[in-house]
Amino acid sequence: MAAALDDVLPKDPDFEVRARASFARQSMMATLGMSLETVVPGVVEMAMPYAPHILQQHGFVHAGALSALVDNACGFAAMTLMPKGSGVLTVEFKVNMMSPGKGDRFIGIGRVVRPGRTIMVTLGECFAETRGERKLIAMMTATMMVVDSPGIVD
Image (cartoon, rainbow, N blue to C red):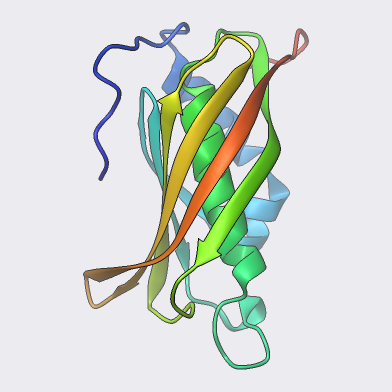
């Protein structure tokens, strides 16, 4: 698990409750079987199990599913540092796939490296986990935009 930002405090003391409620509303995450594991200021870890319905033609987990995992981890890491009443949108990302998606489950860790008022830059890592051993299979850089969400409950 990556370390949280030492010098940045969340603007919303209820950041974890808000993040978990927002995650629960994402039907795409349910479709992929993702779970929100760890939520600390500036760092989020998510998990996704191996499943036959997310494979590509060679039998590996599809790069799109892995990208969704790590993009979501990066977005929620940024959200932990945003004020109440704001939401997060990905405005760009680049992902480097370094090994095939082969494992029992997949871990996405997102970390804020530059928290800003309107734009946050994040780094993401995607690991394949087999029998408890993790292997880094993808890395992402992503830019997240802080958006007003005045009617949002969380």
